[in-house]
Image (tube, rainbow, N blue to C red; front, side, top):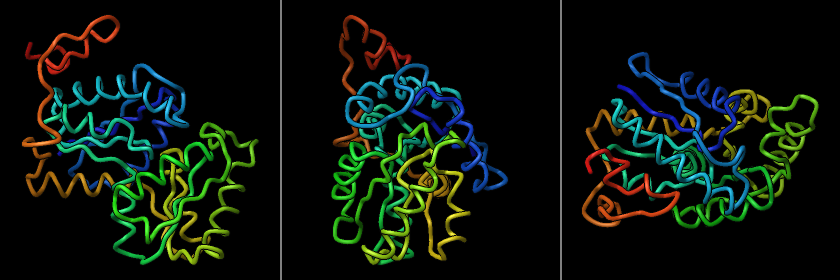
Length: 249
């Protein structure tokens, strides 16, 4: 089976981190195709970045499906463009926040998400509520810019560890969810260090994508995720008319 993993920001080194995490848990028979968005922000930190990351994400979802992907993973913890991608694609599309929360719920009654910036914490809190986990999950921000996770000279990883320790002590968390795709390479190390489950959403989404493919399940097209209506899009968005993007216009 083939799973498309899309980094909806434009930082290719982050895509490499994401790809390594995805390949590390994928079955031997699973091909991971990891791609970087062709347009948009270098990192996604808040609503503005999220909105402007969606067009490039949709391009890669459409391109990947045409190339043979059987499922797609959106590797941003904001679940950037998830609803739009599910409406566009004929294959199942998973967001790493939803996948991580669902996975963690199997192994812990109470847990905490530790994300990057305060401006990112608020959208994640909204997702926690949307996915029905508000009573089980607290969301914390370590106050670290996303790209600082790649800078060995920064203290980003130390601040992340401090926030995890606070979540375990103050929130009575039994498990931790890493609230950024750029943290994907840290899950195993932090699980060992803190002695509790630490869940990376990229890995969780890949395993759930494999399950959906094996079960021959895809997104329902009878309601909210019905195929977009063909119509004219103008200006810079003319190429995003459904009949253009899907290649059947």
